[in-house]
Length: 520
Image (cartoon, rainbow, N blue to C red; front, side, top):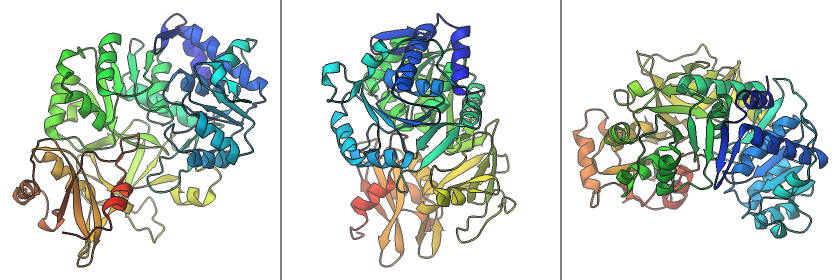
């Protein structure tokens, strides 16, 4: 099967069920299918053909999901782009992907015009402005194209399951974004996996605050809810209180949110004034959550919280289920139904085979395989060869596995700190920090030091006013779970940690801001 066939099947099963709610508009599956079909016809009229790449640079909205499914109808390849990306970054993706069309958001005209100046190979630009008159000269208008398209019924060409459905660009936390190739088979496997793991139901009402240009938002959350014929509420912009209002108003049952967002809602002064009792599932991942916060989430916000580990190249791979949320706090859980995982020796200088595994409790590199695993990077055979070896995806992430089969994340291999000749994994230090009373958020990295080479540095967001470095250091000294040499030697208190939209802390920004400062 392919993504468009999944969509059509759902339309046939639940034609009159509410499929999509955005701002003050709502569509049944039948109504939305007509809209998607008409936009697919409009793209075809512009010359889009099977395998052509169609990029969309749009915030989380009806425009973004309609574009995604219209490309699938045509057998074209969706290229979602982070709507926060600068014009130069968008230009790189347009050149790299060879996309012939760029659909852009209502407030992104300036950037789109800059992309047009830089990339001459793009055939058509489509504005999602409210008013067609606001579209720049020579640019098409999204709604006008739909209104003027002749609905000739199905316009789709059914692709093979191995054909590309999307090229999803990495968040660029370790360098320039790379285009991860997703086939229809990959994305159906990802979505089916999430339906089964989360126990999604036709009656579910999903609230989408996660970006839909990201695998976590689209393939692992939106498409799974579409598969079961659920209702999808799309919020254009996340804000804590507005999200709480939407949960209450729409009686939302499922929510995907990063830990920072969960904490913002939970600790919001108006949290208790909203009825969030309809929520039955929250899914999260990407960062640690303090034990005290997790207890409050379960008791006050939602009784079932899933903590997942994944990546653009293989989506949801490890999952901690609700029954283990507190007893295994900090764990990534176990492999999902479709995932095979191993932890192998971490030695970048050697070709490590899947058979070179490490014993339980020892840290190594996680490798993954399964039907969700990418075919590689678009136009990048060198990086593909580094990532895909011996039939496995080599993640570059450091994990360990205990005797009960639970996996623990220790950070990226590139983040490992070498201080005084000792290897220190940031995540194990962060786990202790999250147990410390008064710490709301934390990140650890190694900063240059003349004596030690690197020193363990903790960046802390206070959850309690007046929290001092001495208090945290005292907590570390009293801990029996971490060696003294791993204790932070430097503390920096910050208002917020820089993160990407996936909730991953951008440690390179902390390094750029503090890396040249002399150690105190």
